[in-house]
Image (cartoon, rainbow, N blue to C red; front, side):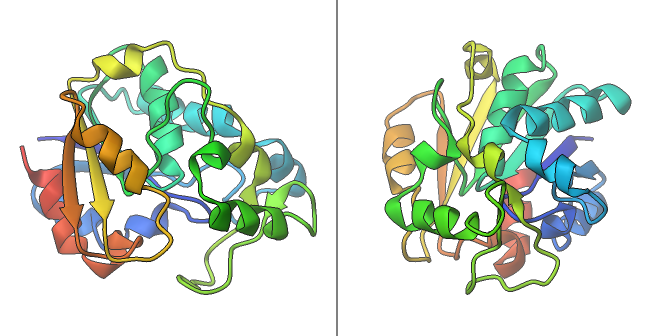
Length: 223
């Protein structure tokens, strides 16, 4: 039995994986889907304003501690790739597999902001204009009313990696090729020539968990 910890992308919570979780559980695996600090419905303004990338890596580590999890497959979608990289670097060997699902794959000192293209940086700037500390969900694409403002600091904070994340035994990147303005083409090119990574291409839009949950589940269940 595998243990999966699923981390959502920007503006989303655990529900982002709602179509995938039952497929993994039906196959007999343990699944934990997270909603990160600052994106929970009852989080107050102070919580949103102070949450950053370290906070979100800490959310993952606290789950590992609380549930006594080891041998974990850690999955991150989009921004969630930042959080799983930071968490895996600090997890003292408890992560055996990383899956970056159309997600950031940061190197030390990089951030979501530095990893994005101009289109997404402009969405960030305009989305944060109202409060200065939270980025409103962008219009278009997924208009799910459950989306929440994303703590701005989580997008801006640079990740600090010691190199421990590079010792995770199995590291994978899933590239979703079926959408325009993807910021991840360069990540795909970099990892294709890195022998430490496996790269998968799927012909979906960015929100692959909802567009093709069976495809995502099949990738995760591939041992």
